Image (cartoon, rainbow, N blue to C red; front, side, top):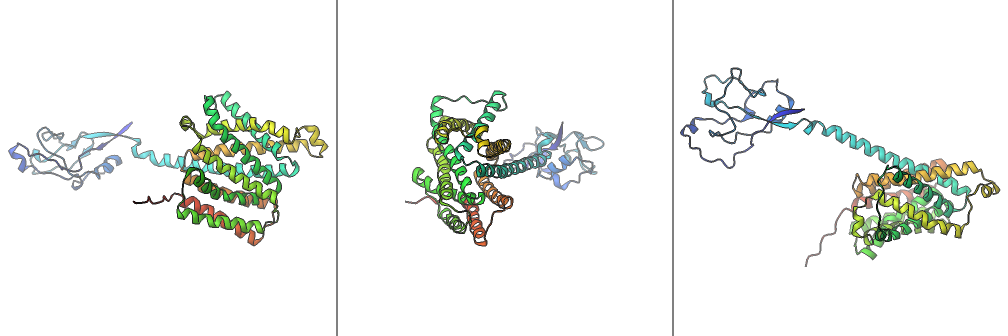
Length: 418
């Protein structure tokens, strides 16, 4: 259903002289100067406020100068008071144009709906990430085989991806050999990034691993400058100082510190940021039409295929019930937590890409910084990790630097003048 509103040209910049000699006796009325009865619809009142003066009053104008009803109603929409003592030519009829009823009325509900949807996605992103780190740490603390644990996570993710493709829950992509060759380097660094993260989580506290991983912006700037020729702005360079200083301060005072966990987290930073650089440098134009979720799904399956033989070679087959029982572990408990960790791992990455499709990269980066704060805080509370005041200060400085970096990286460097 459509409501009607008044449409009158707001200005008269190109009036042509009229041939009618009685034109000088006619008057132009501003619609805002005429009282309108309270019975008007809100849409008509809102539209009338945006009107200025009548564009022209020629004999061929859209305003009918000769038509006048006893009740002074025009087209059944606009009521003007009776103008006693005026000639019929002193009045005009306003014709209405149709506007969609939802032109303004639907905007607030849509905005609220989008905001609510985005808030739910951010909440799920943080929730899945928290539970992934908790379950994953519990598994790695009891089962000291990070390569096998990483393979299980990719295996569960691959099963979910194939399930969605088979039942058309998500469109199955048509990938050529050339596209697979272009995606392969991304799958390699994605595999290594998650493997190094699990190796670090198995050695040090969750909070410390994520504090070190706060240095991702530093490696992003370094690799982008080295391989893409993207020189950072002075503001970006300055924002990296508190990140590096905060991580160094937190590392010195970390109770669970060991070099294996430290360097594994650092290697995770390098590989994860290498993936971002390769996605810009290696991907061909055909992949530009591939959305992020599809690309992530393909990388997940490829990572499982790449890591399976490496796992057997490095750690053998260790996830069998017989081996787990021989190690004195609860088989059902270990399987359950490994499955939950893998589901949360795949879920939070899927939700992360869904958010990235709805917001700008800067907003996503700020959300990722907040997510790291939430994960560190929740892991400290859950595992009762001892944190000294200086360690907390260093972590806070590093995270503040990450937040600052996410804000200032929008500032573009001024072009050099000749």
